[in-house]
Image (cartoon, rainbow, N blue to C red; front, side, top):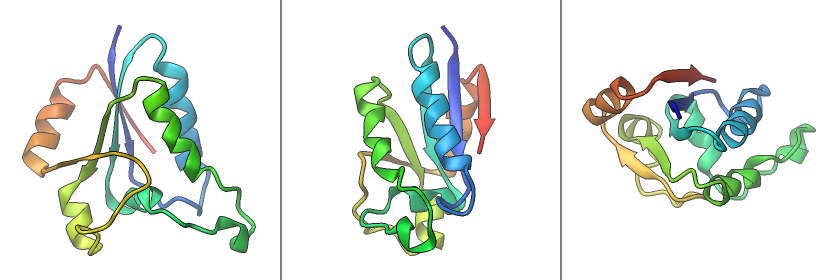
Length: 117
């Protein structure tokens, strides 16, 4: 079993990166310990009531609820990203833990593999 961190820093509907990160997290969770980290514009994946159909994109955001069903409990959101996007008081569509820069670096040091999307 490996410790694998998946960092999602890309915005949700401009590319397939978010969907690919989610698919990979779910697939790898059977044999590995997965940590998912939302940072930079990736935190926008966490906002409820998105309407990607208005820009002709597929709505996969609700699928992030599957993380819990796949026993992926270590889901973090960057404190600095929340502050820089004025989302510190927001309600998200999944349960997350806010992590500061120092603790994030420590967490990443504990990982065997770090994948960035």
